Image (cartoon, rainbow, N blue to C red; front, top):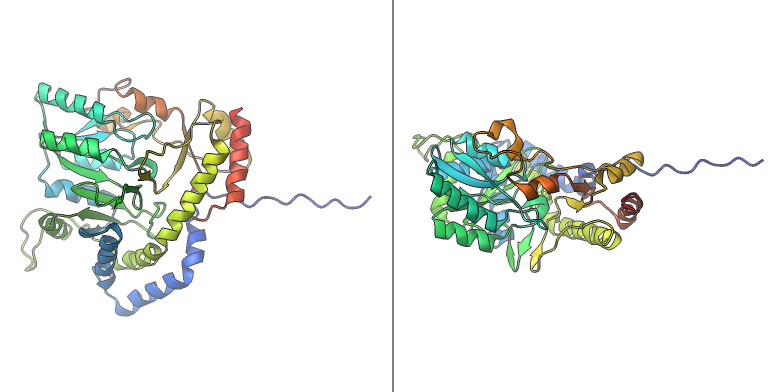
Length: 382
């Protein structure tokens, strides 16, 4: 009998393919890194200023201050507003711990808000209810609201911003996952009085380590950010207020300059993958909501299904990674029990934590791979 050749083993599918992107951009990355190594200005070198100008140009103006991480960016923004003990900052519980942790770190109280069923972002109606409840209780002063652009989709800034203005609250956008997204003709970075983003490697615009940035149209606010990220020192070295070390390394700025050049193409690649998922999975599972006039940066592609465990097991059997996010939402974490109302207080957040599943999403994802993943999802979803 003739020998039968074994069936080819499909290549592993990464959840986020950072090495693949690096291979595509390697020549330009190496050149940028070489320049930094040659000039040796590793802290606040010329690439940092170049990146800040390029980011401002990308979003269409304003001031940009880069930071050592996304968490540093949130801390700096809260510190600049003088937010601290006795103040309430309203945040969603369906997010990474850094959002609420930064609030607690400046001594303020994180007050958790439920999310919208379709967008996964802060529910403006629930925000209004919780602001009113905090005012009635009188324990804290409502000072700020921090909507989170979860999975890459911008929050409802029109509604949240209007409420913040009427209540005299500062609005900080947590755009750690959404840099590159738009609402109408405005990019993330121009949708709130202040916006933070993260350049964590897995983000749509990712560095080779930690990094972040703050965006604002207020020049005085930007000057305060720059001073606070350097221990609160002015140009003469006098410490005017207590700050922190929150600077972006020059090497990370150099890497981000290369990735920013490729960013429009990377976003188009992510959108193509998301659209292919939509076509393959619509009617089988709940695919991500696309509000009119909004685009997503597709930090993650997240479906909803009551058969999540079966889908995840079927994918794992084919060595395809998937992730569940925020199953234990922040209001259920021990660290935040002082300001949490406990289980059952955020019903949409808790329900979506039990039903969401994120599939592989990155700029190197091709249509054939999406179709393979989607076929497994369809079969497991029944």
